[in-house]
Image 1 (cartoon, rainbow, N blue to C red):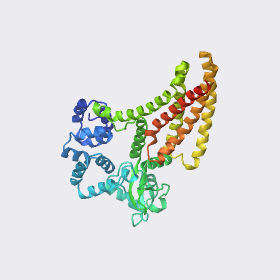
Image 2: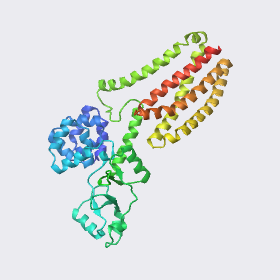
Image 3: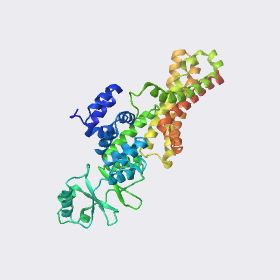
Image 4: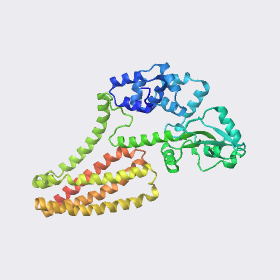
Length: 419
């Protein structure tokens, strides 16, 4: 156990049923319990914390970096958080409370207050002597932040410059301004995009007056990217990335039942549409055999557009200025695919059933549904984003409902009208 990294222990804990998980947890060294707790999902963490007393929790949190302490406290009940904060020293408590005062999904919630700052009017020799006197540096320190007399951000001194330039050189002569500071209120999604675009290892966090508050490091950004990717995938099924795969059966069933109920309502709507064409289906059995083709193809085509748009929204590539152009592009793609597959399905239906008219109806209905699917796949996530709803969570259900209803109505409506 001692040879395992905290992340490896966390993976092992999450892969075990609750009874065996507790046995493994009892073997974890107290010195690394805090790091292990930060690596497991929120639901697993809660189950482990419930087994810990206050002294054990206090020791575990003391081993964490400031930003990790803040993240950990945010996942605890308020009473427990208050007790842990009360047991901390005044300075440490004030630092943690400062981070906790910002939204969890903001730059302020991500930042670490453990930073090294220097003034621009000192020499590199002075900086080196200061660092030697400190005896240690915060993790992921690739640069030292330069501030003025009032603590306002003025630039950064890369460690490589500090080590290679002449000791008599002033900090201001070799400091750089290539990194635009991050406002403390910036969302963590935008922070992650900044790190991705500019290949940062660390970045400064400032307030509206450019006063340096802390820094964000790449290890925290990687966690944000992973969590958002997992959340997007899990949201499509109405789940949460923090869910424990070995959670109690009744609790899991209750969570999933809500999503299943929503989908049942959409299925009943599609069934009601079919029932309106009961007379047509009774007369021409071939329609019942082929009916599932149109909504199925529309669902796939719409999902392709929906996935493309949700990804574009996450990367900041979709905005008001280009939505119309993207809509015409997707409609064009839908029209081309609609024509191609309409011809194919018409020929296939004629060869199978020997009925060209039904084949033509199926082809036209397919083309109509692919056009609606393309338009809906783009407009649904745009509309949901404006309403403040996660497109990954609700987009799939809305799209499925539209493609089912439009596909069935187009196919059976045309059949009723022409046959």
